[in-house]
Amino acid sequence: QVQLVESGGGLVQPGGSLRLSCAVSGTLSSRNTMGWYRQALGKRRELVVSVESFGPTKYADSVKGRFTVSLADFGRTIYLQMDSLKPEDTAVYYCNRVQDSRTFWGQGTQVTVSS
Image 1 (cartoon, one colour):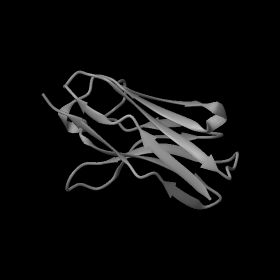
Image 2 (tube, one colour):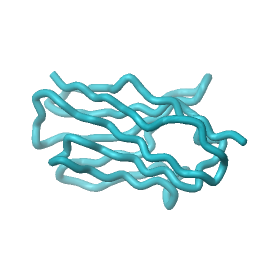
Image 3 (tube, rainbow, N blue to C red):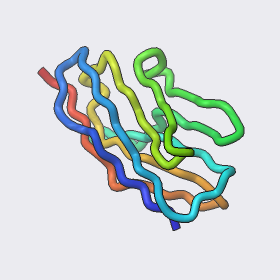
Image 4 (tube, rainbow, N blue to C red):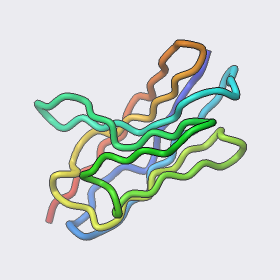
């Protein structure tokens, strides 16, 4: 089993920055995909960025150049640095991990971009 716990959400003005964190625990496989997704009110959950353990990092076009993903603690922490935030970035952000054909989600953290 894998547990994911996000933190770092909050209210920020347009143009501001936030850094989200996701703590990963449990039985981890070296071959995996980590990612951040988001879901705005009334919309489908969408991919923000995915990081394959033995592959590329992929960003959604809407966040390229503004968001940066990074890993630490041998993959037990994943960060999402969000800069130049826009009101349309407002959503609940979820940490995601796929391994051994199973998908795990965190509980989500709210990000609100508003003046």
